[in-house]
Length: 390
Image (cartoon, rainbow, N blue to C red; front, side, top):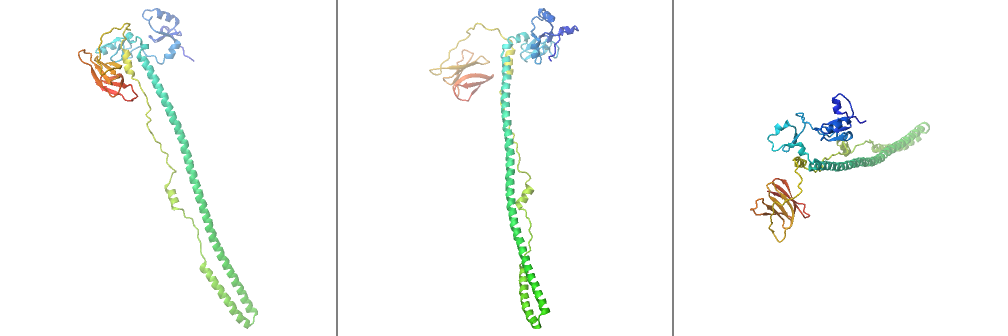
């Protein structure tokens, strides 16, 4: 809901009325009746009055017309300090070369270069900002892509490690199975041989007992010697088996490299963040200089031009092509002679001859950077500039 604006004059009289207009000079609202009085009163008839809707558009950017230090209206302007001042402030500017009425300083202000330069500065800042925002967003998108690539890389490394570990596990398991089977078979064969020998000795024992019980003395004599030879042979075989018996112990020994890996490798890799200053460009106009140019009182428009001085240039060759000129602060003039690669210095003193300054390339135009620093552009594809220090 839009808030209402009260009439300032009526409010002063303890009456509440909605304002329909706004005086930018008095900085207060005006009802219909007060507006009529405001427009007809001599002291206020020249004030700028706008609608309340227009006031709402600019209320947050309105500049105060009252001096904060003295509470007086700004009536004067000091070009030296580029400050608006009130009548009391003038004591602080006695040494300034010129203090002019504010009404003179604001003549044609809407058409001034200060306002257009301010607009250009804002537009330039917005252009720079939008371009740099696009660049930063592009960098952010590239950064997101880097995140995806790094996550993918980490996953691939883990999968490679898993695959390699699975292969090593399979090889180790197969080796274990082969060696376990060998040892287990050796134990089984030894046991089988010993059981076989034990069975033979048991049979020989039974045969000996049977002979002892049922055979004659002669049979016992002969049988004892025959069975004894078999027993000796079997005992020799058992001893051979005993001497060949192997005891097996199977263990697992971790590879030294794996042990070192587990002890020393605590992470798959490192995440490195590289920070660089991208040096975003921001081309800024020299607003203060433009402001000072329009802050001075504007002269009346000249409707008729008059020739004040004429001079003749001596050609440095058969031909001379003038592409630019500039007036220096001391009244001297610089002229760009494109054909002969010269800058001609014309003195404001008529008795002094022109001075021809040769430069590196064909001059195109001249501009003044400082009171004694001149920059010359070239009319070719060259990207260089000439700088003269006068």
